[in-house]
Structures are given as structure tokens and as C-alpha cells.
Image (cartoon, rainbow, N blue to C red; front, side, top):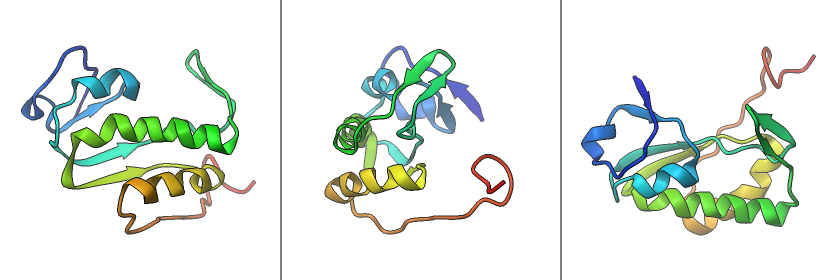
Length: 123
């Protein structure tokens, strides 16, 4: 699978089977309308975190919900009517984004697991 960054409008065929690893607010404007069967979102958890020089600061729950709503507004035009969105989140942030998802989409399932090893596992 090839990782790409978008800098101009593309057709669905040009990015089929590819991973777009880019700021969503930069990439979304170049995506074709109603082409994606699946969109996987992994927005910053609502924590203070430095992502290779891009600092994300934790926000209050309403501000984070607004931020996540902007992400959905950016990607939803690219999703097919029968498409699926997976959203990665920590347990605390998931409580803030769940109402946003339920307001905009039909939430069919929520997957939660406890990690035994690796990041997020109990020490």
C-alpha cells in the first residue's frame, strides 16, 4: 500500500488503495465527492501532545467537540452514502465525540478493548 500526500484535486482511481497521511484540513479539499467506502480517522486525543513539531493542546469538551465537528465536515463529502467511518479515540475523548457522531451519522457499533501490552497498557 502506498502512502501519499495530496496537493491537487484527484479522482477516486488515483487514490484507490492508497493511504493519505496528511493533515485532514489540507487534504480534504482535494478529495473527490462520494467516493470513499471507508474513512479511518485518528484525530489527536484531547491531550497536550507534540506530533513532530505540531503541538496539539488539550481543550475543554465543547471546544474539542467543535474541532471534531470540523473534521467531520471536511471528510463527510468524500464518503459514499453507504460508507463507513472508523474513529480512533481514547476513552475520555470518545465521550466528547460520540454526540457529534450520533448527530451526523448512524452509529452502529463501538469497539472498546483493554490493552495488555504496549502503549496504554496497565503497568
